[in-house]
Length: 406
Image (cartoon, rainbow, N blue to C red):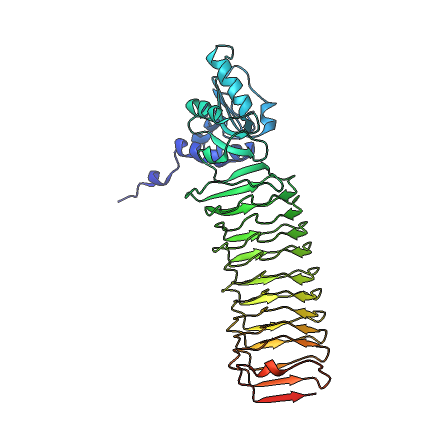
């Protein structure tokens, strides 16, 4: 019995469907050379599947995929479909002219942008005629329209953002992502505060600063901070309980207080140029097991790395100050290397850690109250003979059995 091979052949209709994914004229020409039945491929199209319309002589509908396509408009066709993002003002004017029989061309718009001239009633008007239209760009700063009234804000491109102005998005339960358009240099205070449904955001390369409380309590899972940013403000990503991965740029020179507090990041590399890990910067980051500190670092502030899952930490040379409760309740921490540059250890610095032994550098002039309190595993400590400070608290609630000097 001979197998029917025709069932494996691609019909002309099927090849037409594939043509929607072609990019250039040569793709169609190559297919038409395959066999005789494909020679009429381009004649079968009643619309242009790609920008170049030169091969498609029988089209009745022209699609505009980019701005340049409009310059090659073929007049007198039945319909024109605009995939490029078009200002909502232009769409409204067209619809009004069409209703009043001033406009004769039949147009369909797929994507619009909203600026300061557009109100909520205008969006309702557009949706009446184009129910499937996508709102692609939104002028956050100047728009008279509340972003919470938009039918779909997922993958929205933000054209402008306010500086130092709360710009709240409602407590929507539908997960969404944003793209911040190139040209924006600053993310304003409280801009995405409490946007728990925000799961992804793309930041522009023009960005210089992320202000205080820009993204706290959002649903972000990962964030890539672009090169050029020099400052991330206080609590910018605090309480982002789904945030597991963050990449910092080499241009960064300042981190605000509580920047990553109560996130789920597991590891992080702090770039050179940072001189201070600020107050509560990684406090309550219970999943943090690895942090790379730069040689430029001078200070670890209060609660900087408290309540983390660090097992070992090497404090780089140049660090002079380790603040109060810096490693407070880091129960898994067993190994700490202190630098020779160190001058001061704050109160409760290593409270409730699992370090077993530690050497205090000779330049240290202060060991804070309760520095090693509740360190049940600590049995040995080495001190410099030149140490000129009260060491009474070293014994408090520890199992230190041996103090060495050098």
